[in-house]
Amino acid sequence: MKTSFFSSHSITKEIYGHGLSEYLLAGQPDAEVYEKILKEKQLFYDEYNVYEMIKRNPQLIVAGFLVKETMEETLSRWIQRICSHQQGFIITLNNYSGFPPNSIYLRLLNRQSFQKLSIALKELYRYITSCTCPPMQFVSRIHISIAKDLPENIYVDALKKYAHKTFHESFTLND
Image (tube, rainbow, N blue to C red; front, side, top):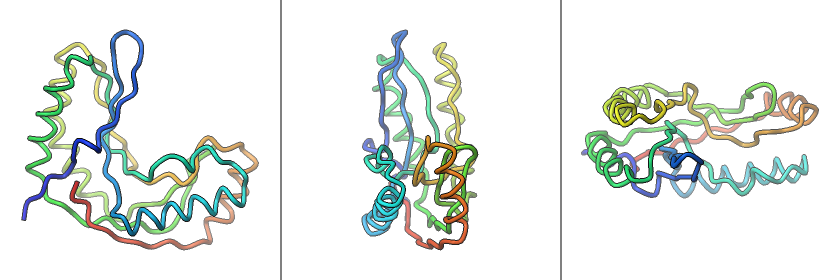
């Protein structure tokens, strides 16, 4: 059964200078796993008193791009078309890791489906660059952040602790 991989709610944007807006193409866990991740984020911030990331939604960012706002409608159609040809797939989050020097995240076990999606998005990449916009940036290690931009001392302490902590959840990513 084919399903739409990303909905319009999965595309967020932030206005940049030079007439460009930043868009992130992302997927979100189902409600049950989403709540478990929020709980993990809350536990992290209760322990380390670093609050800024708790407000950010758990998501799997696939790609980001800077484009002209006038391209938004066309981009939306292209993304809907590309993603309508993708099937939903199972994502398994398995334990924690870190990006030195300041980020703790949940690891993905199965990245092959995201690699297939990235190949399908190359068409969008060509469109964006043909409009004299910066190239689309694909995330090489898709993950869900628990905390980032941490002070080094908190990162080192948290990584030691979270390296021994377990988290294992799976969900189907349909949009």
